[in-house]
Image (cartoon, rainbow, N blue to C red; front, side):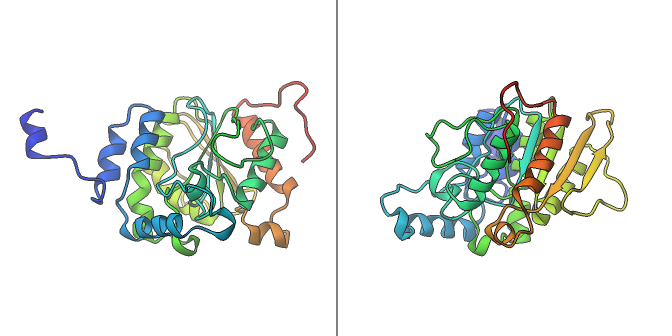
Length: 268
């Protein structure tokens, strides 16, 4: 340890500065994922995720809940990123994998499979053999929030993790699909701070929104696409249908050079 490190020790996992400090020192996605899983920077989220993991839902009493921040999921060379909201209390917070173990994930993975980006249409647990092709799933908040509503402070505390993840993906990243208005509003400042040039006024969220961020000196062109979130409220009411979601994902896949492999065409 040098004198600088001794005078300025690393913030602990419960320190609000932990995400920024640890994210900036992650040299790869595997390292970033490991650091994400150790974060305790938001007291309300820590208390909630651990209470849920202890009390459990009746249907999952035999499960050993993950009960920690949920890292992103997908290959490091992904050309498409999908950004959601936050893990579900009895979904990702239980299984330890993004979008896995709840109805929202069921809908999303069925759509990804239909477009040829997932090896199977279901996502039950972290060891079920599911793999993704060319796409990585993440969220602006990595802990399950009460009532699925992170606070602005919790969103901002978690922002360095998303910024670092997109930066590590950026050499090959071509498109980002954002699920819902919360993710859209959380993502825009991250992209601006990372060096992408956003149009003015800033683009509004909407299903089917498609904004092209031009290449800059340090960043290549990036396509930003919007979709309604595949929550049960949206899917049960028909606000978001499977064809609507697969259309957005197929468009992103095309931008990302992920056209369906021969024999993989599936009906949504």
